[in-house]
Image 1: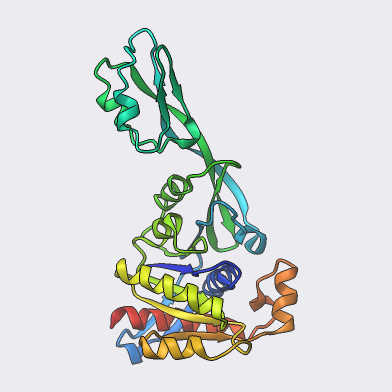
Image 2 (image 1 turned 180 degrees about the vertical axis):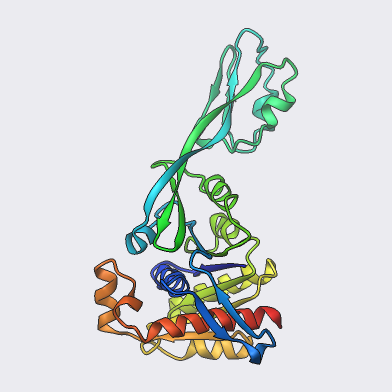
Length: 300
């Protein structure tokens, strides 16, 4: 199962929810729950059944809380064109086909702008002289390791790079179908978000009860409905602001999975880089129950 944790805007507590959910489900002892109410009997889950992917590759921060020990690093590269000036006739076909303006053909020279290239390969495919080949340009890295019983991976986009989706795509190619995968999604509703949530069995939308929170929640809901991914909402800092988020979810028949209140101890644990279930033990069973609520919603 793949559960993604997203938000229409930054700062709602998306990483907080993803980290505490993963940690609650991967504690030292196996999970054993009576699921007779769901018609599934009793199930036991082994220690290493949780995989965590931080797909916020422009600014990954889940490692601050889970503190993984990284074992492997892989470069992520995209193909960019290289022109053989001896073969090139400067016909301009490559420049015409490039939708990203990454190639400019002058009278006697071809200029390549690697930062604009999307790596589609159209220029090399359509070059009539076969003067264009592709070389690899590294745009980021994937780091893999372990955080206790959690298999942890995140991507890191190189500073100055504009295209996060190739790194996210490479990161998601390492999903283990035998594990529960929790994906920490970038904020917003742009291409990196769509690439991250695509293929999820369920998406948790984390919001806050403010006008900005509601506005961006509506945008995120529209995206998930277009992608036909089932979803529910967690309201963070639920006892501030107004009740308009709850009203919207009620009208749209969107399940509210959890309310997290404003709590000084939660804020202190966050500022110390610690998941708050380590400080407030009563929240661990709440996050475990959240997982089984999601399973129930998917089964329906």
